[in-house]
Structures are given as structure tokens and as C-alpha cells.
Image (cartoon, rainbow, N blue to C red):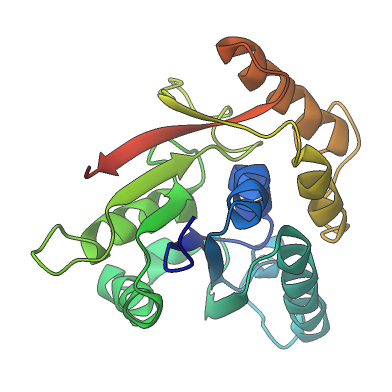
Amino acid sequence: MPSDKFILIIAAHPDDEILGCGGSIARLVKEGYEAYTLILGEGVTSRDKSRDRKKREDEIKRLKEQIHKANEILGVKEVFTFDFPDNRFDSVNLLDIIKAIEEIKNKIKPEIIFTHSKSDLNIDHQITHKAVITATRPMQNESVREIYAFEVLSSTEWNYPLSFSPNVYFDIENTLDLKLRAMTEYNFELRDYPHPRSLEGIKIKAKQRGMEVGVVYAEAFELVRGIK
């Protein structure tokens, strides 16, 4: 695979990128693609009644370290982070989020983007999806030719009505272990089974998606745009 095949993962929060497409990214990197990750939100501050970055400063610093370690396991070349308010993207002008995405997209010039589904319960995920679609308008010189929307455990399946409708599957039998290893770097985000955001929950979801298409483990996506 040519080395000029660039991928950009655009996620709202730390760990979304692993939950959503970690196995697929690890596989594509092994196949010769060059992957980059953009995390838009700071994480953790939504756990307080009101946003207090100073109170959570040490946690945010540790979280940024975890982001880099987790993505390194997948083979991601570089990680970019912004500090939009956690679970409060609706308090920010949409244009500011679009501009942040455009800044990194114009630097990387990816052919492929992986991002959130518009069907998620989480408001930051919904806004990220909308911002990505806006930032990648299909103009003549747009580099992005494929956009895949991923599912995030404890967000996509918790929405009602359920509307995530995958039509593309990546076989991750040989890279599920890397996805699980990367997720363990986010130890503060992991929960015990039967919470879906547990190592066992992640494996069960990969098995379910694999069963849908006749493979052992898979990740599922909605193809939002594909230019061939």
C-alpha cells in the first residue's frame, strides 16, 4: 500500500478513537497507511457540576499522556489535541470546532477520515460528526475521499431510537489484541463488566459485529462518503 495513504481519526474525547476504530486503525497501519489522531475535547471536566479546569488540571495532564500511549500502541504517527469543554460542545460556536478540524485536516491532507456517528446519544459526538461533514465539504480540491462513522460503546447503543446502521465492516481478528491493549492505557475510563465500556464488553461487541459478516472479530462503520 502506498505510504501517501493518510488517515485522520477525529474523536470528541480521549478513548473514543480506540473504542470506535482501534482495531481497524492498527490493521491499516500494518498495511502501510499513515494514521493521525485528533482529539477535540479535554475530557473529565464534565464530572463536576460546573467546568473547573484548574481542579482537574492534573487529571487532564495524565489523560493527555494516556492518549499518546494508547495511540502509539496502534501505530498512530502523531496525535493532536484541543481543549473544547467536555460534554459541553454545544456551549461552543460550531464554527470554532470546524476551524480546529480544518487546521489539522489541512496539515495532514488525509484521504480517509474516521469519526463519530450522528446517531450517538452523546452531544459532543453529534456535534463532532456535523463539524467533520462541514469541514470536509466535497469541493474540487478536497483531499478526503472516504468518511467512516464509528460506534462508541456506552453512547451509540444507549441512544433511542437506535439508528446506527453499519454498511462497512473491518475484520480485526489479528488486531483486536492491540485495541484492547490500547484501551487499558485509559484505565480511568474503563469499567467492570457488564458495563459496555469494559474489556469484556469491547470483545463481545467485536464478536457480535464479526458474527454479522462471518468473521471472528470486526468493527462496524457507516460509510458516510466514498469516492471511487
